[in-house]
Length: 110
Length: 118
Image (cartoon, rainbow over all chains, first blue to last red; front, side, top):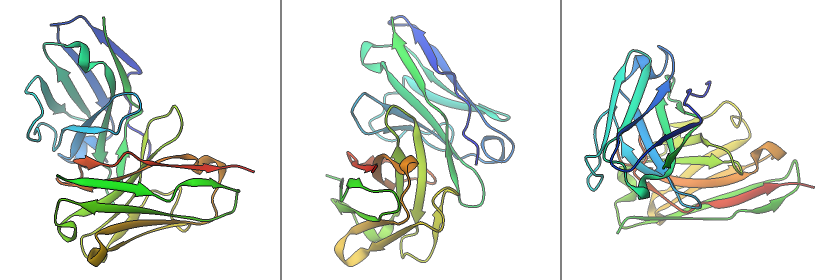
């Protein structure tokens, strides 16, 4: 149950796109289409952005998109806005009914 | 409106016990898997445990298996986490969450803080 690997930080200017990676193994990210992404603002609870690799819950803007290639999943935020500045976490089914999170990425909007 | 509200956190000595509760409302509680996730101060999210709709299946992260027990009372729309043999590294904000999608939590509470310290 090792944590998934995310870059500690990412940044972009308003209007730009930024992609955050989430690297696991064939036992988690690569083995299942159960990757989720969460946004967490300081002092707030996490919010689900993406589930099952690329699906968005209702109410999540289509500026947020997810994908996966091999053992690496990605979250792309297009048309960056100031309110997108937050921590982002990926998670994946890890087999044997476990769930594993990434270490988190702090997104800064310049 | 879907809501989950945690309670029961506090300061406990190493080796002690604590029982967290999560009150759910605004949805049919018995239809959803439920999950506990924790976040140590200044750290990332860590999945702790999950329980099936009828309580028949329960799963835990390795670090808490044998010490923590997840349970639910569908008649009371409530989720619980019994935590025994607490250690300093269990100190965290504990979130209750509804698994609205497969392996994804779509509604979270605001968390309840557990501090393990002498």
